[in-house]
Amino acid sequence: MNRKEFNMTIGLGAAALLLNPHSSAEAPEASEKNTEVFSLRGVYFHDGFEVDPIHHAPLHWGRDEWMREIRWLKACGINAIEFATMLEFNRIPKTDMEKKKISDRLEVMELAHSLGMKFGYILSNTVVSTVPDNEEPGNQMKNRAVQLCPQKKENFEQTVALQEWYMNTYRKADFYEEFAADWGGCHCGQCTVDDYMKYVDTFARDAQAMNPEARLYANTWCIAYWGPSPEEQGWKKVFENEIAGSRKVIELLPAMPPNTHLTLPCHHLYRPLVYQQCGGKSKTPVFPTHEDIQSVTQSGRDVMAWPHFIMDDDTGRSMQWGIVHSEVRYIRELLQRLQLTGIRQVMGNLYLPWLQILNTYAYGRLLQEPSLPAEQIIHEFAGLIASPGDVDQLTEVLFWMENHSYWQEQMPEDARLPSIPCSMDKEAAASAVEKLKPNSSPALPLPYSPAEWLQDLSRSIGRMTWVV
Image (cartoon, rainbow, N blue to C red; front, side, top):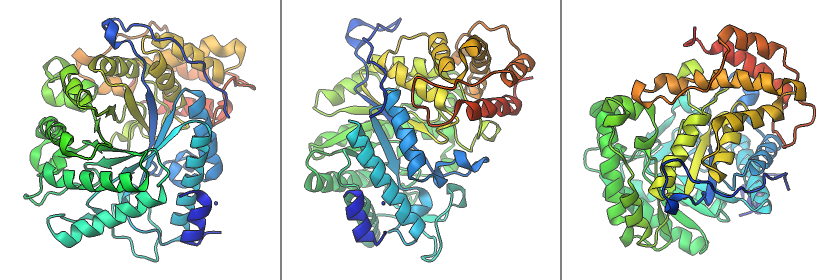
């Protein structure tokens, strides 16, 4: 469905500058067969949260903000974008606000396709909004939704029909993902991974009929939620069950329609919470392995990685919510580990995209050249933001921020990467930012002005209370 078609059915009245592709260089520990760059280089937008200042929350963005963001991603080398129906929005749209958001997304899909980018949409399963018909859905923290156990036939049919409405609305999407849980899943005690796979099978067949070119990915994020709730399991058991559930999906994948592929969260390759639960990175089991991926690809199915939180973290870590991040070293390490497994498709995430233009730029560069030094990427980015005479000073400030990121703060000692040489402390970094002059003509189409971003950077340094 295009925007005009949607406007008629729902009752509404709604080429960028490119980085040159770089030849791949071998990662330090990679073998020759693993030096291929990533073919799908994606960003998933999570637009379900509030933040101060409000203009940083995509929940409130309109067409113009999205258009600027998509052109920026294209310039960074990103070639796929993805959306989802947020928690309270899981219903047939009732209000003008909901209808406008869908109309804007259809325009985003049109723009993405015109720029040669792919467009994907995440489907949930058991979750249904409980917001009254005459009220607008709100941010995710209001949590006005329920999970309907699909063991009851009418629940399965109701939840399938809801997601099919969104599939039909975005029927020109290049791919869909059937999200295992969070939102979704079922804690009834009877439902298992097999019940999740009924949704995968149903939506894969729908995609075949609706758009023969579209793919359906079984995304095993929170596959452990097809069972006891996290509170009952404890996080260590959750992550153990994530591996077991994902391997069960791999086992069942050959029986799915031929347009069905696999998405793995890859928690165990990068995530501090997993390392903490396992007693350190060195004690954390490796999943997926090269053999896991090979077993899937040899059967003719592709695998996408869906790592979350590394480019931008959510409200669960309130100390760093709503501030600028720099995790270039850790993004680099993750992509190199994914490269070694044989994964060639990656979908990163953004909650507050304008705050995280540094990590976005780094992610785009590293997807094309995973061995690039973090120092080089940070210096390149500083050249987009600061006036020519201030580039080196901003680079040093960002080195300091990179060395003290909250992502690193959460890491067990054996998972922390070496710091970038930097002579600044927190006081010096804060003082230096105040004197920086913004670049008046950036070489790439930034979605947000350098002057405003520098103000956000200054505010963010003051908010980094874990650094003394």
